[in-house]
View 1: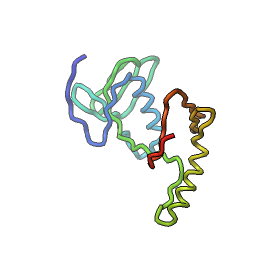
View 2: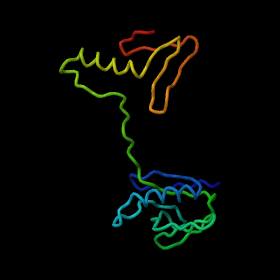
View 3: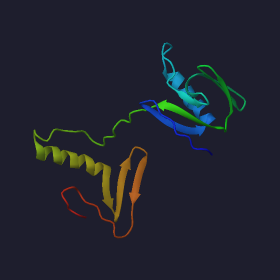
Length: 151
């Protein structure tokens, strides 16, 4: 495999995958776009980065239409392509309450909520998630709150 440096357009993420994964991403993206919106995918060609205008799939082949070219790739061929950077939403376990109002009450309520998510039973730490319960067990494990109290 030959390494080649190239400039990336701003707010784009570089992908190096099998062509079939580009096809899967393309289908998902096209379903989410309104009719007047254009694709935001670009593909690396011998002529540089080009916009992906369309992708057709037939048997195990992909036909990728770009600005001035059509590429023919097998599903398992590796391809370099760009997708827009997607901002990841922050995960929040429990609600935020400003501490300026009633700090002790806010901390107490937060600990009550946290107590339903994290529990210690029979020497094991149980963490409740949306996918199920995570069990942490072992010897010489320690954990602490920010106050520095170890348990």
